[in-house]
Image 1 (cartoon, rainbow, N blue to C red):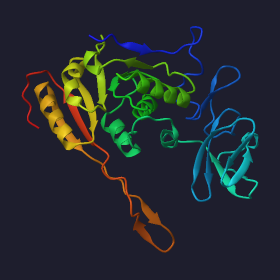
Image 2: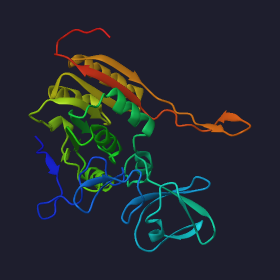
Image 3: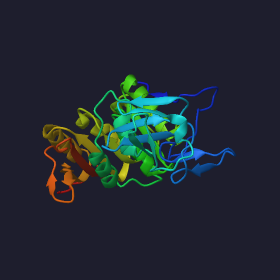
Image 4: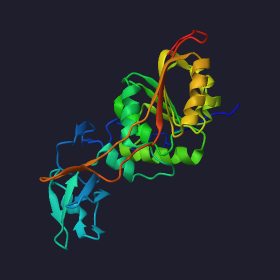
Amino acid sequence: MVQPTSLLPCRNGRFPGRRHPAGRLGGISGGDDGEETSTAMGKFRMGEWVLLISQRGKKWLVKIGEGPYSSHLGTIQLPDIVGREEGDFLETNKEAKVFLFRPTLEDYIFSMERQTQIIYPKDLSAIVFYGDIQPENVIVESGIGSGALTLALLRAMGGRGKLISVEKRPEFALAARRNVHQFFDGRPDNHEIVVADIQDFHMNAKADRVFLDLPEPWHAIRSVGAMMRYGAILVSLSPNIGQVQLMFRELKANGFANISTFELLKRDWKIDELRARPFDRMVAHTGFITIAKKTPAGVSYQD
């Protein structure tokens, strides 16, 4: 059996940075007196992340510090952002306007370091909603990738409950950890990353929710089913329908019921004063989402 390894980085026995679930990028920062204050409607401060958007929609995610920032539109001085309101703008030395916004989770996911394909926001939103995330849930996810789903789950949990991310490839676990810590400006107290194969992972508590993003998720059904309470929800994302069929067989054989599978297609529209038409390109198939509920093994249930 593989011995799970926890990735719990520390410095002198302490985790660096804050651990608030909303995150520095999410609009929460620590005050001088140690209390946490919302910056969602406040002015930009040194060390905060800012999303720069050109008049044509080009985006750059930048951390406010000393010195300049340059692009094809010209150069701005980053300290000039400090004290400005969200939605304000600066002019570059080429007289181009650059607007200042706080990045959303979507902005961060598409800008963060990644070694794997991320789960698209259209799928993330459905996974979180149909997974029925509740603040006090004990949640297990496997296949952390670059951490996109991890970030979405932690946001939904609001700093409560427990999220255990199981990833068997150390390089993926480390990259995801860096992304999570950067977003939250430190390790969230309710999150743990474990380096292990999900088939060899065990825990004493029963999971309320399980999320799988694995190449062969059907191999994990027996082991994750054993750690789920009755009524717990499993959500799996698979790119191919053949994977879904194999999943379905294993789910039925291991006491899961109310099984459903769907995919989401997102089509943007171009709107102006004179016309409205869909864009020529769209984010179509990215994966099949399968949802199932845990019941006692051996119970016959007809979907």
